Image 1 (cartoon, rainbow, N blue to C red):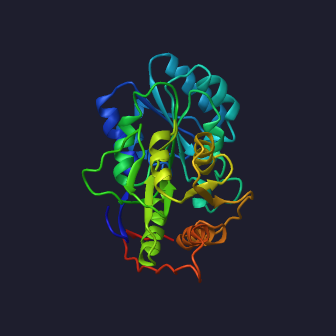
Image 2: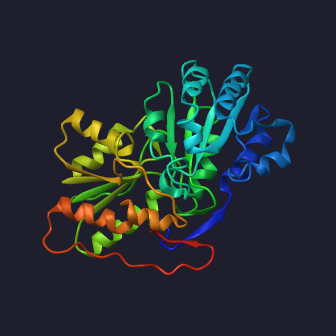
Length: 334
């Protein structure tokens, strides 16, 4: 792992999709009126004859993607996460998931990473997609995994929902890291508490783990790039080593990663105590600053530290996280 603040990469998804399409003529790109915002302006410039501008009509776009998949194409469909899941859910169910078609739904701006308020914040997208039979749900952690996941999902059976941060993407893993779509990535083992996370919460979780270790806690970290189907064995191995588990997600604590982990622990009778860090049962407001929303709605590094400290039952105040100075082209956990 690299050390924070992390270097950033611009548009790793868009470049990876262009590379895949250059090798695979059956790859099509659909955009729901958010072409540049979803990095697929790169695809439009390179392969205009395989680019479909579906407009601000996401339900129709999903139906189109299902029809194209029936003709042997592999459509990659792009919009913000809330418009990829909540708005066209019926079409995703009937045109894509029920017939188990190879449509790749790419939802950008997950959780409260969007400043646009409840209309734009996909705080329940994982819960919705997890509930659909045949659907794979992926939430990768950094630019290295984004570059790898684009070709990796191309030949998975059935539909895929891929959750992505947009803009400048941190590079957390060192070159040589290999994304697995079947296994969790155990960053570190821990006997006191294990932090289980996915997606853009990986940097926050790593920084929280470092703060807790400095205070004497034995902390493990598990990154979960595929939330469904969940690597149950990997989660159980980590949980059985620790006295407690803290899940960390940029999503409602209802129905997402925390719920998936809780289900596994309960079904297997694992005695580890559980805390879930995520968006409580609430809608979030809009704001100009993503870090402001992370602080207000309980997603900051300090919130993760506080949850783990409470679970451990340690005396005194929780250790305080350090504020990292960030230069241009760098990314630091909130």
